[in-house]
Amino acid sequence: MSESIDVTGRLRKMPAQAGDPVAYTLAVGDTRIPLNDLIGQKVRLDFDGVIRCIHCDRTTKKSFNQGYCYPCFRKLAACDSCIMSPEKCHYHLGTCREPEWGEANCMVEHVVYLANSSGLKVGITRGSQVPTRWIDQGAVTAIPMLRVASRYLSGLVEAACKSHVADRTNWRAMLKGDVPELDLVQERRKMLELIEDELAQLRAQHGEDSIRVVDEASLGLGYPVQVWPSKVKTHNLDKTPEVEGLLEGIKGQYLMLDTGVINIRKFTGYEVRFRVLD
Image (cartoon, rainbow, N blue to C red):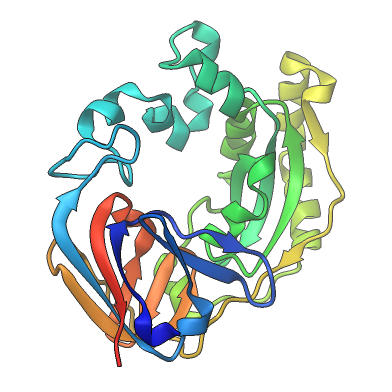
């Protein structure tokens, strides 16, 4: 079956389902390809030079914010700077680019969590994005710490945590499998003690029910990896439009080939041809 795979279309972020291991799908146009079945086989991606905005479908010379044209990047709330820095949310000032989008995506319950992807990190996500967000980051374990009333509030809590723990993943270490063992239940307890005063201040300002400590279990995640790279070399479709190699694993949003790794999410909106080679 795999020998007949030869599809063209626009790349999208890889859908993934939690499992042992995580089950990945490659989205090329309207085609969905189960990727776990292809590990150990040679695959090829060819970029034809066309990038289309994932929102308005217009052709763009450059992709902004992983898949958008520049006008959409400037216009859409999903591309505003407060998405990367939620503590800078300005919805309450009446200046949100798209108030209805903000109500549906930001003024909803968020989870503040701890994860182990390349070591301990703090992060936030909408409640509906658990565990998808953890998979996208390549976390091997993750645990909810707090449930809060809005994205803005989750950003303020995250900012309080960042003086004690990283908020970013070392993606090279993540792809090498260099991940230390951590007791996230213990780490959660320690973090809550460290930010106790900040949480009390935020509750006083936003209401006692706006921040809830949760006692939810941690989740372990395994990934379909046959060979871990000893050195991480990256493929870039903008510089080398032909990428070919033996698929040795998948983690986060990366395909791990024997010739290097490629971040599929980075090239969202790129028109490509994907093939399994003999």
